[in-house]
Amino acid sequence: MGVFESVVLGLAQGLSEFLPISSSGHLALLEHFFGIDENKVLMFAVLLHGGTLLSILAVYGKDVLKLLVELLDLIKDIFTGKGVRPNKNETRRLGLLILAATVPTAAVGLVLKSVFSSLYGSIMAIGVGLILTGTMMFLTERFRSGGKGVWEMKFSNALFVGLMQAVALCPGVSRSGSTIVGSLLSGLDRKFAVNFAFLISIPTVLGAFVLEAKDAFGEGLAGADAAPVALGMVVAAVSGFVAIKTMIRVVSDGKLYLFSIYTWAVGAAAFVYSLFL
Image (spheres, rainbow, N blue to C red):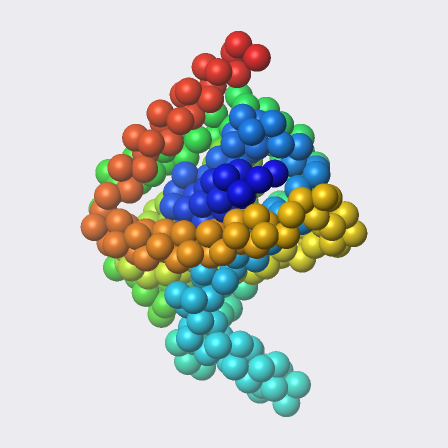
């Protein structure tokens, strides 16, 4: 894998991880057309996840720090007999909502991991997933957005958003698209919806990084040059930062349908291409 492939894959990972166009789908399609065996670039895939994690922290670093401090305070309250106290303050409530959204995603992922993994080699499945992503976003934009913030959002809403995130385990279905759609359908304020969607992506991306790291570090770079791999990671981090900032504006302006057009086009092309394989 040379510099060109590393840069393109890094750009695809960074942009498609946070733009609602499916990072898994785009990476699988690019690896197919570049003739790259995904099993031989596990380390690179892990480092790309690391790059996107850095981009989230660059945007939401202060929020993450506040959540971590509050987590320590929550643990202290539990051990001193004060209990969870979910409404103690805004940060604690947000942290517990994030935790609630993470549970269904993790549960579905653990139970159906092998099923989803078997679909990643299917160009047809990726095409269908992209078309589904575009349709979800297009239909959601037809609904009037709500005005729920941290205090108005219910834990049942968080569980629903988490289930929507689990849907994105299917290849071609966008994680950010699914969670933003779930948040808007739950009646969240548009700005809070996109922020919540990206905050709950942190444990998901971190979990993927940890789960893949064992096999990846055991394999090493599989003969790949370190420089292109490092460059791909940097590109993923920078492009991910740009994508997050872009999505905050796009969702706030109610223009998700623009990505529907793109995912429909790419999904249809992938589906038709798969018929001739």
